[in-house]
Image (cartoon, rainbow, N blue to C red; front, side):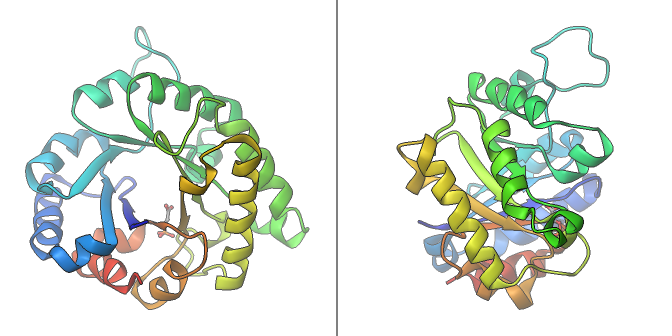
Length: 247
Ligand code: PGA
């Protein structure tokens, strides 16, 4: 299984940055890197079209969220069908920033995921505990509940990617230890196994302050099939260095 190196740009960038960043990354992707990694970026939705012009053949493009409604009078929203129509292949769902700032629940994320599947998109579903939950010994309970309620029954290894992102590690420079990540990813794999016959084939990404210095160890951790990278995905050299560090 190749490692999936995914960049979540969040609300950063511009037309020019989209052009520069993607053409720089694209120009450095060679056969050796492609043997071990796949690439995916989530620019802000407005830049998806620009992203396609510069992403080349080997970088997939996704959108950071979609509406939980199919279409109609929902001002400001973007539907899963529109994302597919614009040529994107993936949609990021249930990121902790959306759960925190937009009160997204597991049930809402599940509804969005079903719409993503109906429209032929791959859903990257994010789960992860807060620092307080971890300190209170609740990390596994929280992740189990999020996984059960956010991931639809119709999920499979082809239409769903899980991203484990401990909230306390996102944008903080703090990373979960390889031992903690190994334990949680194996727990997630086990829980997927209780519901899905192809659980072994699901990609499970780790996210939270992944950078060139820690990527080698994290990406070599059992059941870590790639990374969801925020800050370090905005610099071509760092994003590429993370991919190069993959085993
Ligand atoms: P970070 O963000 O790499 O900046 O911690 C990861 C994410 O939020 O997906």
